[in-house]
Image (cartoon, rainbow, N blue to C red; front, side):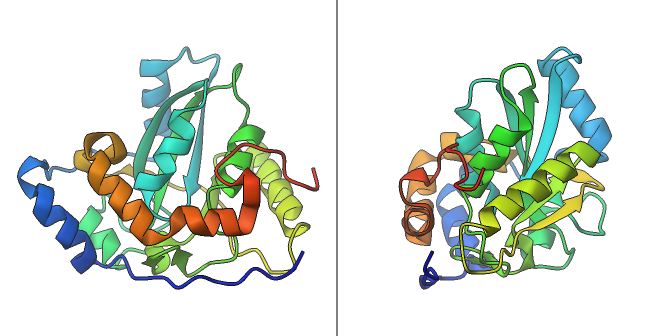
Length: 235
């Protein structure tokens, strides 16, 4: 497949976020939710939403976590999505700390799902079709390591399946795949106002997503499969 050209990006800096925040600041609650390690977070979420026998958890980094919740929320079998941070050193980071690139965390979405209704392989297909797999310096208009793409494996099985999906994607293109596959050491939930942002602030979300060029770039890379759970071409 021919090399896909890169589109121009603009930076989602704290100043840019501030412009959005100024419009809705009076409506936002700036309190951080308690954080815990990934296993405890996943267990607590699963127990409150699904029977333990069918509950499973996956964690994906695809740039702005606001934009990674909707593709999973609409899937039958997904019980919840939580925006947060992973991959860095600092415990209980705030959004401000992460957005300034001081923690080595990246924005992620953690998905709790019913394994009898949807499998991890399908979640992986959705992931790939919602990211730019060639851009390791951020995603779309969001620049910096805090927006780098990654697949965070919770166990050996997820690591194996994530690696296999990355190989399948690599077979489709003549560019190197920048998405990292790494173990999940800890997950920290973002502040409450970030959760379900696209539902709470639909107008702001749509303007941000459109201005970021996300959907245009996804169509450029993936064509009709953009945003979907379509099979990867080599699988």
